[in-house]
Amino acid sequence: MGTRKARRLAKRDLLIAEGGNVTKVISCVNLKGGVGKTALAVNFAAYCGGQGKRTLLVDLDPQTNATFSCIKPELWESHSNKHGSVADILGVRNHVRSDTEEVDPQKVVIRNVFENVDLIPSHLDLFTIDLDIGGAVAREGLLSRALEDVIKEYDVVVCDCPPNLTLPTQNALAMSTHFVVPVSPDFLSSLGIALLLRRISKLGRDLRVELKNAGILLSRVGRRSYFREQTTQSIREAFGDDVLETEITERSVVAEAAARNVPIFSMGNAQATAEFQSAGREIMERVMKP
Ligand SMILES: Nc1ncnc2c1ncn2[C@@H]1O[C@H](COP(=O)(O)OP(=O)(O)O)[C@@H](O)[C@H]1O
Ligand SMILES: [Mg+2]
Image 1 (tube, rainbow, N blue to C red):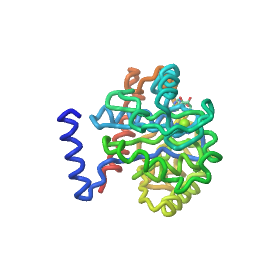
Image 2: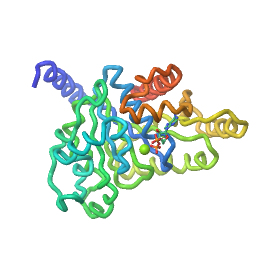
Image 3: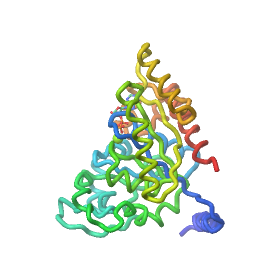
């Protein structure tokens, strides 16, 4: 271990000993798909990395969108075949090898996908998690137990969750300090927010973790229309300060960045950059609040 890293870890151990919760773990959740969870998780991780924070992005969605927003399928395939993915960490049966090998969580991490950002990739195998580990003891804590030593190395961990509250999301929340909820300002999406927040609170109580809301983010906001403005207004009225001031506009450059495996900040689009920076700043402010 390099002396700089050793010194940083020693400093962290001291902070932990003093009762400080140094690693902030933020899960990106919503029961709906297509609301911008992955775009936020990936670009928020990139934002934190850009701020000099050691950041780990954990992809917990079997659709592997966060993974493929950072790395090429070829690298994912060779890496996950050799070192495993989040599915192996969670003890999901390997459907190619038809067995389950213990993996070394340190080796599952793909280093430096973006500046200061490492990635734990996902795998399609995660689709069968409920069948494979449904009967496992203390199954909601599998990830947090497996990654205990890994996350100590990071200032920020960002979990990209699937659009449900089943085992992968439960595992993410069980190791989280905070959650963020990207929402689309459409009528049907807005109906689900209160239900989701209640469910997350209940999960937090059941899992005995203190989960703080780091913000509801209006995402993929489309062209101005009277109806949309009304929906946005009613979400802001209903959830008050929980809603971030920043709104993320619908722009094709967001999808393009994902396709090119780069953060939005590398796309030369000043408006999109400003919005994701402002969202990142707001989330970090809430996360760092004592
Ligand atoms: N602000 C945005 N503008 C345009 N396209 C976006 C934006 N945010 C996300 N997308 C695209 O919309 C699709 C769904 O977004 P994604 O972040 O994957 O949502 P989720 O993770 O909630 O399912 C993806 O193709 C993504 O690239
Ligand atoms: Mg997603």
